[in-house]
Image 1 (cartoon, one colour):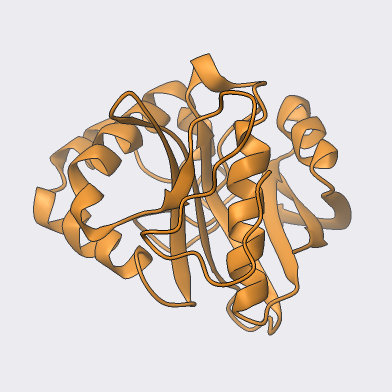
Image 2: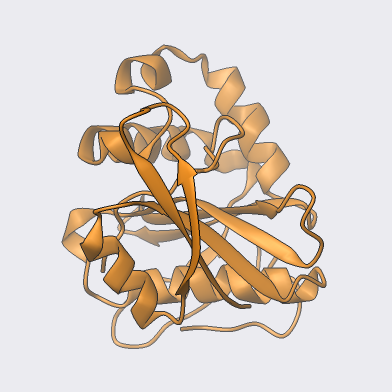
Length: 200
């Protein structure tokens, strides 16, 4: 699983649509219906709020991520600034966030799949508990799908820990299917991950 701060593959337990004809830039929010918060690409100035959300993710779903709360809290602010800047522009890496009442309540990261032309990997998928089941996950994934299509990559991929059936069902509702591929967990040798795919 791919970490927002590292490079292996990571998906959080985010169970909970918008589209865009061209690349989603910082100023291009997706405005979902039904009272959901808008989704937009992360901006360089979002580092402090991204750090806060990162710490929440790790506390809520520790098995889904590749670092501990303590490690993330110890990282200097400058590292968050640098990482967010790489996700704010371009077509190789991106992150999309949902914002409500001045704080981030959802996140999906994405990157060009190494060695897999035409495929985007989703990582660090997270919805804050109060928004799970609201449809916000769909809006975030569709924002990534639009970005992936604009980058010329027509397929999405993610990994889920085997046994996390709630997350698997949530992704199936969004059109992902089990590819049949099983992978070792990058940090916990007793766990395995299943790979899921869908069209962007």
